[in-house]
Length: 424
Ligand code: ADP
Image (cartoon, rainbow, N blue to C red; front, side):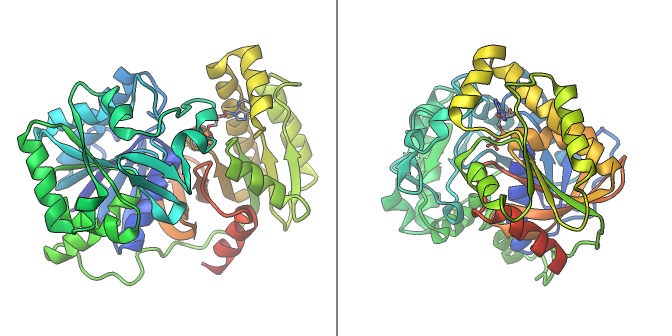
């Protein structure tokens, strides 16, 4: 029976969380979308239900999250985790606040901590403010995100605008005093009727302490970082054996490709680094604002290039080009166009024998996974923090799939990915 039931608001985020749990020795399976009421639970210590709810209408995000919670409860999970982005991607309408409010109400626990810190990826929270490296969130490039521009780094304020409850802070001065002090602070805030505590965290040691402090919480909300301490809670309680290799995946052979739909600085850099080492096609959605035509162009290009070496197909563009496409089509339609094209390209590549595929971008990954009919991902070795290879199963052939959140990964990520796959 699974111990931890997780609900993630996008696909790459789900994988990122699952990778964290695997590193902690929990065998973890990610299921795609809300399971049917009669679906059996996979044999795993943790289950992550991956939704694509980050930017859907709040009412839909809430109802899908509640359905996921009901299934995770039914299959016996004991603790629940709502995973959102380490850059707190959301708008004033949601969806972090509305979903967390609904989960808290359903679980009847009245309170949850909120901590997106992920030091391994340079996200830290100090005095309630989210930093990316040494920049405040709103000066990190995230203020230009195509779908969820983050223009305020003060998370007490940001979450406060999204919830019907109140938001307080457990400051760093308390966090450094360890798990007991954090637990006491959270208990005090809950007794005062606060619904959330943003909890500061700068290092993994802080996150281990926060995890320990939340061992009895019904619900934890945050980025994948704050899950780092949770496996140890289960081990301490005698519920989880020491695992040596929770990350072993079956071998998969076939062509290799990268599909990029993220316009983040990190992904743009990774595409730049791949040039000169791999064949790279940059799609021009502004010149061809038609998903089927973009797909056909890309597959015609790929036909003569698929072989021993990985190929890279990118829709990603710098902010001025993104703005130009959005001005022409509207923000949502521009995103949908690119996602539809990438999904079609993924389908065509798999039909042409691609079996190892990297997708960059949360929304892009969601679109690709849905189109390929993937139902379940077993989580394997990490390529870079937060991005593991996974063994994907569903209606099509089994694949090795890596879903990369736009901002994640070192500049040589696309090159390194296949070396890690070959070594696994
Ligand atoms: P990230 O993980 O960086 O947030 P996402 O895939 O979640 O990446 O979001 C990026 C969004 O930008 C997607 O909706 C994608 O379709 C859209 N997009 C990608 N390329 C372009 C482009 N050239 N012009 C406009 N929008 C684009």
